[in-house]
Length: 100
Image 1 (cartoon, one colour):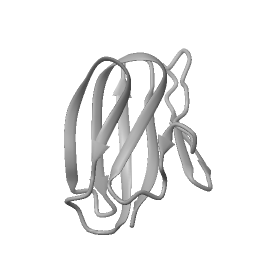
Image 2 (cartoon, rainbow, N blue to C red):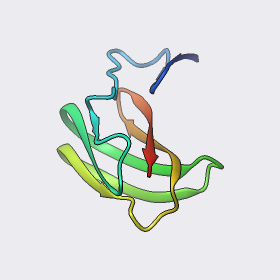
Image 3 (tube, rainbow, N blue to C red):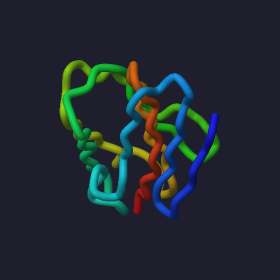
Image 4 (spheres, rainbow, N blue to C red):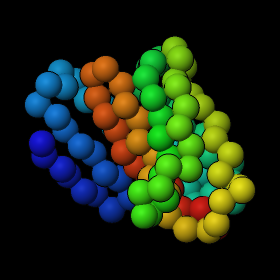
């Protein structure tokens, strides 16, 4: 597995992924956020979405069911850095979001 880290973006490429795509700064907005975050995918996706805090504790675990975008409410959590991980059949995507 190769990891490429770009300042507000983490892309993990797995050998079995035929066509991975990224969550970039334009796909998760607003970032930083005060609570509500929209995650836009480049196409309709089905899979799983996890949000963890910086220690790895799962804050949100939900299914993505044929959706092109999601709105997440992180406002009940403390300020800090959170990781959004999307697991789909053809790619696993990870991005960071800062909660003010």
